[in-house]
Length: 418
Ligand code: SF4
Image (cartoon, rainbow, N blue to C red; front, side, top):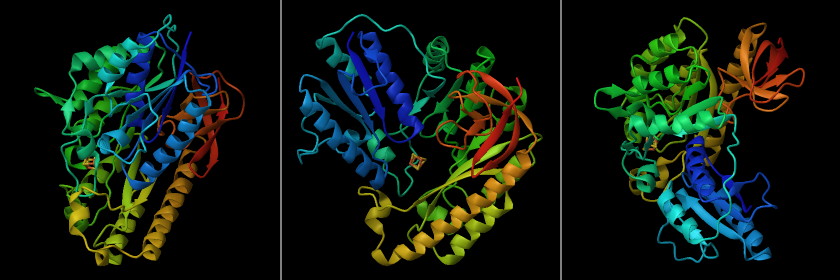
């Protein structure tokens, strides 16, 4: 059987696209392998959200072209945001690929595979944590972001097609399903909201953990905490990229909420009756950001112990965005100031890690085993947040009852109880 290797760059949203690409490959009779050396087809699902992601994609492309040059009969496919962002690339950089397709373009992949050789289908395997995309694109048009340019306006998938995909993931052995999309909180079908959708999924698959990603603060569903209280298998986890808290900067970013709106939401999270963790992302050094704006952000972070994970990025001027065409170089804080702001956010993240390790010390909780020695708790997303390190080997894919025994950084030590 011919084997395909899928390489996913960037965020969990790309994982959902890769799952769809893997589905097309399997349908066409390709096996999926975890070894690039043994593969006959390499599909690279790229990210081009910001410049470092573009750079990483270009580096991987260089290596992939070398791989192809060694044995030119192998198939090399480039997919995702990079060709989506530069569809008219005439630099020659995308030459050497057998197929170049945009984000989530399964139709073109299927068409290509139909015309190429196929062998017998692979039996269902199954990764432990999977991702389910409920919408494509974004209509928010934040001033700094290229996603709406690359992926277009938001299109919500129907509940039927989402439930169908969830069924396939469950059949393949998924133990956790992450609900992804550029703006998941805005998902709608008639009067039904994303909370309704998750409640359907959680009710249909009570043994699967569901985790909602990328909740835009302006569209946070009011009934989300009630949903958590009602469904034990919806993770007590709020992934909310606030980006900033200064009203001036939020306005300039084109984010339609205020610092007070965020304080109201975070007060609610803080008051949740039970353990709840918040992951957030921030941009440091946004054009026009002053020391006062930044101090306000740091003050905000220090107020909320529910914040468990903080990811911070420097501002990148991205061609084609509103901010790119309007800011002058004087607007951008100098590199030294940006570095020092990022390091202050890092200090704040360290403080939150210490608070959480202390808070969780001695707690008995369920941990999903990703490997024999590593897993993730209900409070942490796989791959991007802290891990739990087991004190003895367990079976991957099982939910393990553990007692937490402190931690290091964002990782926790877990004593296996059963
Ligand atoms: S919400 Fe804003 S930052 Fe997020 S994908 Fe949409 S436009 Fe980009």
